[in-house]
Length: 216
Ligand code: AMP
Image (tube, rainbow, N blue to C red):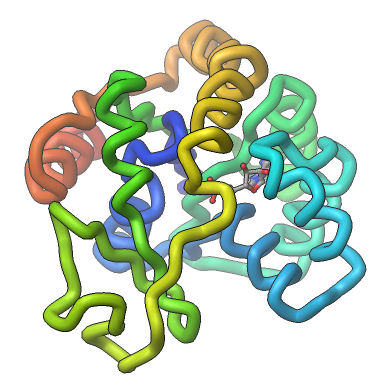
């Protein structure tokens, strides 16, 4: 099965994707996580990506498509893939369809987590990430036991450069201009499932799981 988890920045894609992949034993592929890892390593890809990410812009299609192509070519996940943060443009979606087709696969479902802009700005502003293990917290909704320290590994928590309010506004603008058209692309293919992203993490998890269990 190939699933896409779709939605604006701060919709909770990463959190929900981790839970789904655990439940269904799928491979979680997050382009954002992969690009951040490349930035941390100081890899050539990372240096290129950082200049776009820090401004809230999308990394060029050919770069991201190349990253995904390598993953799909070099991994063989029995229960399939969950794509988080990819595709983000129509050319990426078309390239994905071609890549999957050559492996006799296709996108089965696209779960779109719907969250209004105002809620996103307050959610992302409070988001903190562990610099060591990448676990995410929220200052209000999911705080660590000790401020700025990761419960899981004791690493320090930090705010991503692209989570600052000015950058979030830019990311939302980029999302509506470049990424939202994908909803029509997947609606036309009858595989789009829209999920209310408000409420607790568990509320949203249940809605997604109900939607995935529906046959149509
Ligand atoms: P995310 O963690 O998914 O919100 O991604 C963080 C940033 O990484 C985005 O704002 C983009 O700059 C970049 N990025 C991640 N995925 C993609 C993608 N599929 N296409 C282009 N840029 C991406």
